Image 1 (cartoon, rainbow over the protein chains, first blue to last red):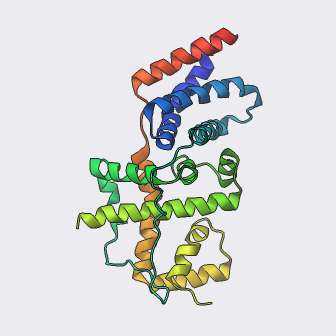
Image 2 (cartoon, rainbow over the protein chains, first blue to last red):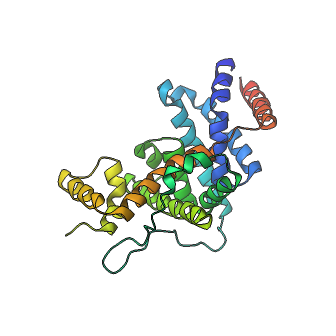
Image 3 (tube, each protein chain N blue to C red):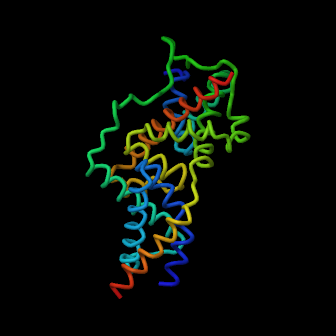
Length: 180
Length: 80
């Protein structure tokens, strides 16, 4: 148990972050984190490879989150279509006002308004898209690991990830545009 | 089929993953060299992932961490 507690201490914040972003509810997130670590302990004999322990935990956590969301039949209010770029009739992208916020975004990481805008944008994603985005871009799992965690094919995972990134990029773009 | 901005958006993920055929990648890069809006789009698309990773991480509150430890000790202790 002492060795396992060391692992819990190492990974609990990342697992909690994932559960909180997925479920949007601190109480549900806490319960899922407890379920995740208990399940991990019970299934330790089946786990192989220390280097992937974090990925394995995140897969368990994502699975519990999605089961909980499906069980609750969470309806995300009025589901908005995912944001994506617009093009003119010749296929030219309808952005390009010369404002590239990527260059100064790092200076704003601690900005409460930007953090809120990003949290809201992530919360707005449908759960299946949110899970894929969080597992890939914040936790660094492979496409194959994510596919196993969410019960989808690798091409479906890639498609959801791309659409989630497009939607988030658009919302962050709007945030910086409002400041101009 | 000529490469336009829409192709860039559609194929960007495959480009970043290094999964595009060489000829497709050359076409895309040639378009990017002459299209400032697409360069801006690619930069902000890439930054989106990086920025979200930095912003979304949270430390587990100490109170929750203590409850997690108690929960696991109780449940695991009971089983062993």
